[in-house]
Every structure is written in structure tokens, then in C-alpha cells.
Image (cartoon, rainbow, N blue to C red; front, side, top):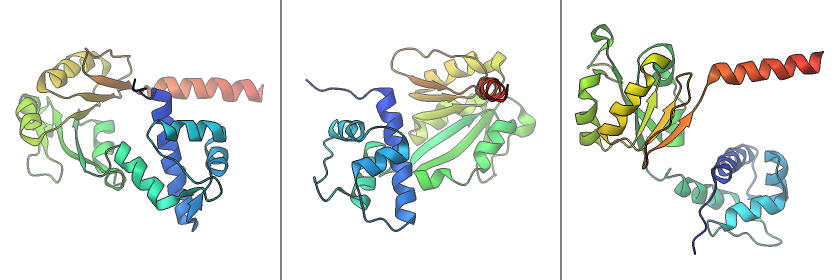
Length: 208
């Protein structure tokens, strides 16, 4: 029976990968599970357990080959191919995402943005801003599976419905409300206001 990794496991794999990139910039060639565990804040047994779910094993005394390990993690995350993503909403968050240059280093490319405001539509831009009614055709023609919601909360549920109907399978939601996607669609909710509120509370609690 195949054991599927938990969401927490996948999050840890992302953290391991980021740590490995830092180690590579420092000139590391090999890495041990205890070194990686200390960097990420978990136990070495947790590192080995997470890797074992994907058939990744190191040598007891030789550790893991760093480049090989990064390559394996990239394959797990589909970074062996470029993942095309669309953004819905060309407001402040949407524009910030479009202009961020770091995505392509992670194998992610925002290929288009969609908005209901005709004044924001710019088909000839480097990342074209298109009308919402073009979403379904664009998704089908370009094989898009991932989309980002960057619209006000009042429009988020309707936008999610349009994305699901268009065939998008994974959604990152920046609207400040919890969205629940239908079966077959994965959604991650990122509420920046809530995260900051929690951070402010704990900072003030420590200060007091």
C-alpha cells in the first residue's frame, strides 16, 4: 500500500530544498541529515523519514550528494519542467506577482493576468493582461493547471468558480477569506492580514 505524504511533509521538503541551495552557495558538496535537520528545525530522523517516502536514501557515513539531492527534490516538485501560472486580478498584489523576478528560478512562469476592468487589459504587455472572458480558452490552449487569486474578497468565490470551470486544478488564494474548492481542485489560502495580526499579537505579548 502506497503511503501518501502529508501536506506538512511537502512543506518540509520545500524547506529542505531551500536550505540545500543555501548550502550550495557556501560550497557544500555533501550534506548529512543532522546538518539539514538543524538548518530547518526538525530532527534528523524526520529528515530521513520524509526522504524515504520518495525513495531517497543517503550513505550512512557519506551523507547525501548535494546536487543529486536537489535534483531529486526538483523532480518531486515538477521543477524539471516549467510550470505556467495565471493570475486573476491586476491590482497591487497581482502586479507585484507579475513583476517578481524570482519565480522562474523556481521553475514557475506567470504567463498571463486576467481582470474584469477593460482599462487594465494590455494584450501586448510582456505578461499580457486579458479579459476574464478569455480565461477558459487561454487555460485550455496553454495547458494551465495553476492559478492565483488576487482579487478583493467580494469577488473571490466567483473567480474561484471561473477558474475551476476553466480546468485549473491548483489555486493559491490571496483574497482575505477562506475558500474551499470542490473535489479534484487543491487550494491554498494565504491571508496576509491574518498572518500579520497574529505576528503583531505575539510580538506585543513578548514585549509585555
